[in-house]
Picture 1: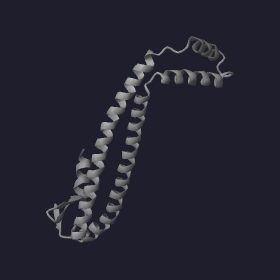
Picture 2: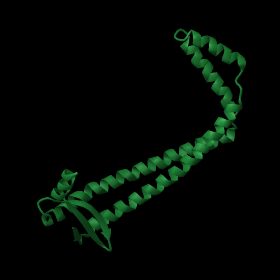
Picture 3: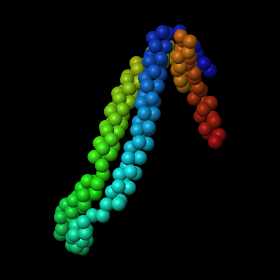
Picture 4: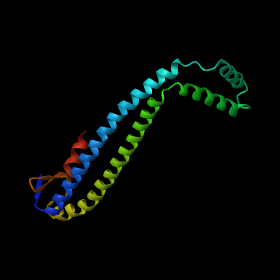
Length: 172
């Protein structure tokens, strides 16, 4: 069943919410593109660091300390850090900077998308009570609102019957 409302305020809220959702999805697409680039850099960095052979004295010392595990755990961590620092020195500075810039761009876009999601929720919080107030008197005992869409300056409300849904579910 569909109900058509000619409430400009409800129409404007739905239109605003739809625009915000579209904008958020656009940012999600940009984030996905950045994720692909970030993965490429991670793969390239692994190739570079994989070719670097750490100094033998550090790895030998690390193996000795592993045998004394609990007693020397902190020293092992320091040696591991030195090895990683040594490997990371082989990664070109430009590559590191681009990788970090992509990570920062993703963070900014995620923050923007989350702000839009909060705006969408605010619009929904204002919209739902208005729609319910307008539509509830027109619904049957077991009918409820499913969706509200803005079309051609009007609001189209689709409904469903809870009793019929229960019957379908019960039969399954």
